[in-house]
Length: 368
Image 1 (cartoon, rainbow, N blue to C red):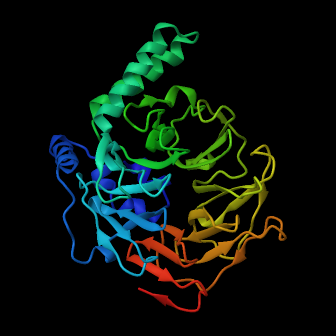
Image 2 (cartoon, helix red, strand yellow):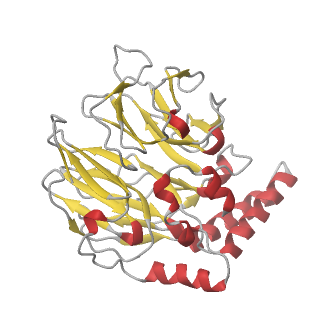
Image 3 (cartoon, rainbow, N blue to C red):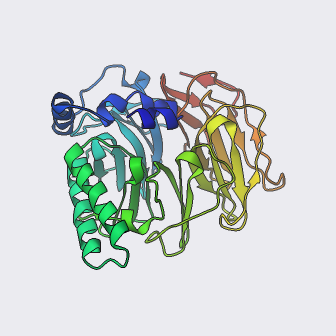
């Protein structure tokens, strides 16, 4: 738990760590309760701690603490709370179309929705995920070329099982309604090829010898990228089946990863450090900003450029004519922000520790 608190600078994750990393039987039982207790309807849910945002067609979806999921059908001007079967904090959400989406979070939970986020079902939790990894590790051990490494993987998997549902998923990437990858703390990684009906451990196919926390995924065509703590970067050239660790330009933690339409890869994290690559991560150059505040999220906007937000609510954009430079975009909000999304009308919605903020398309005004 201390290691996680020390290395994860993304402020919004910290509020849920007591649920994510319990110690002792009483706390383990409390996590079990949150996996079986529906999220409570909250009168002022728009002001709750919200950690991630997504588009489901033209609908906006926000997820956050205690299983809260909010929906907006008017570009973020008004919100209503959805029905969710768990009350663990949700850290990431993605929709592949107007109806089909997933959310992941603490206690190893994976939720799926087939109706645009109105209702959700549990597809995976930390207990089942740990068992899947243990089964995969034992199968690998039976035919391993490196018995010592295989034995170490089995030992780690056995510890995952004994510790229970106590580790969070932090990122997900689905390319369609069937194929997706989810990653999280301590190198957790699972994939599905049937829309989440079944899951397989991918931990043995990722070059991550120290079990670094994995906090972000980006994908373009057959190339997939992972980013995480202590400068961890990896690339897959086989559609996310296996990953090779890349040489990193920075030793601090990365929290966000995104690709521009032209294939430029951007990775950003602690203390305002950001880097871009035009050769699929083989080399990086700095993308400096004047504000040494950790980046928390990056999205590809409808015009193909990238928009970043840091933990003080300052926005930055890439420009295809400005090389690696990041251009300030609008006025900083001056409050912690975890995620940003562009609505269908061009407005922006930002989520964070104080809830949701909408910025009009002209960036002339901001309303709570």
